Amino acid sequence: MANTGREGRKAGSRQAAWEFFGLELKARREAAGLTQGELGRRVFVSGGYIGQFEQAIRKPQKDVAARIDEILQTDGFFERMWKKLIADSPYDEHFAHVSELERLATKICAYTSMYVPGLLQTAEYARALFVASNPLADEAYIEDLLRGRMDRTMILNDATRPLYWAILHETALRIPVGGPAVMADELDYLAAMASERKVLVQVLPFSAGAQPIIGKLVTVMEFEDAPPTAYAEGVLSGTLQDDPATVKRIQGYYDLLRAAALSPKASLGMIESVAEDYRRCASTT
Image (cartoon, rainbow, N blue to C red; front, side, top):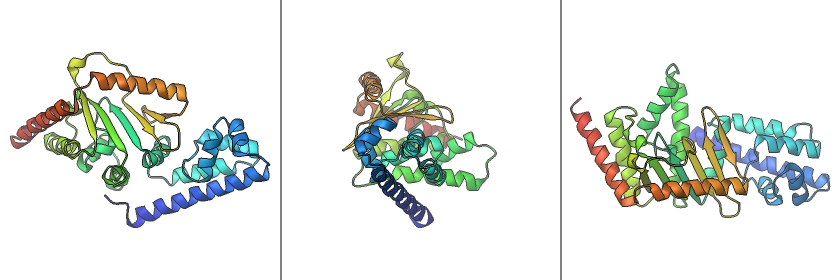
């Protein structure tokens, strides 16, 4: 689903607002007589991060915006603006910053333990998950969630798409989200993306046994001009890590999972086989 019309205009206005945020940050920092490095040290980030905030390349987290207000004595201006921009995002507060980083990443490595990751979901698969999580929600709300999800998936079809490497536990193939027909289509899409070499997909089979416990969804993102970050999702919450030692440890866990997973070729064979099983089941119901 292309980001056009009202959604496209909203995305453009959000970016313009983040650029204003950056210009104001630069102006207030210079008025306080601080270099990027000096401000960075006082709010516990690097000077390079401050520069990226000022250029609207990266967006600060809420606690960083609050610390900037404290150091620059801006009476809550940057925290209030952060809250407004996050409120205008189509994503939950804990994920809004991650969605921005996905668009900037040069490489994304994801592990999911139960479901197909969001960037590889079909519309009907995503809809089934949203309805399961919001059984009493009206259709307009579900459609809003779905638009946000489908807009995210477009980065994997873009000419400048990141290298995307996903490891799915076999459980993600076996849970019949939306029923057999929806699952057959989802796994067909997953297989097509892998066959067209748009993504790398590996399956961690049941036979692999015990593996590092790193959550139901973990994503490591790498960037051209910034250190990598890691995101771990919980129940109605998420944690974004950019401490180098922590990210390195998470990358090590991911490497262990990758080593235990089936090869991309064997994984594709399993995905296609399970898709065919769902198709047969759908044809008999």
